[in-house]
Image (cartoon, rainbow, N blue to C red):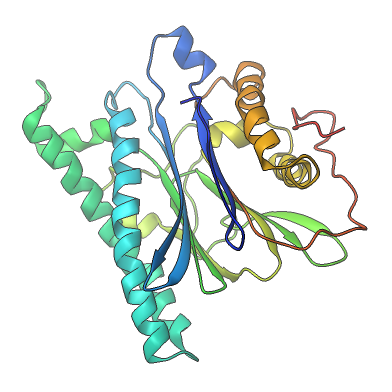
Length: 306
């Protein structure tokens, strides 16, 4: 997973998505367990953006988690195409109050359907390729264990959610200061990823572990989705995101797309050695003449833009 996808439009911003197989997994001959997705789409003329990442657990009890992560991304893409139909219906029926119904669906309906669809895909795969030592499909599905995080942007709002420890972060510009924020850190539901454990799509109560946040996009400059190998390999991941945003603004997005594979390679070899999957959406904006470059700090492997 070394090639990067770069999608740019005049009014939709720029999308970058890609990742890298972790140094530890290469040393052990294991496949990359992470997956990612980024897309700019349209339904009935209404544009929407989708970012998603998934991190297969990779533990001994999860030998098919690389498939589970891929299936999670597949489920997110399917659900997003259904969610946007409902969102547009709400907007057209009640332009002044569309957000209420859509927010409720994102908070409660979407995570349940996400887990159900992922589980169905896993069951279909198990029927064609059963595990020799597992008889119960519910138990066997744990072999595909994975996290998932997604961000949907529509009509000036960002809908972000996750099951597990993959992250959705934003870089915002208030006009006076540029800030980076982990928007799910204080989300509407608490996370459970203490030590080496994390919430999982394989859990029967996965939907109850859904963390989500909904916020306006008016001051957002960058939305980033990343598996935990990214943050765990950095002393200050939020400062690094600021550096990435500023570097893209100065050097351009094609330059950044060329730099990111080597940057992630340094992260995994000098950091925790985990796989890394990332998806970035750089929103269209007017350049801020007074903005100063942001350093990721001496302990981080930031993307240089000197």
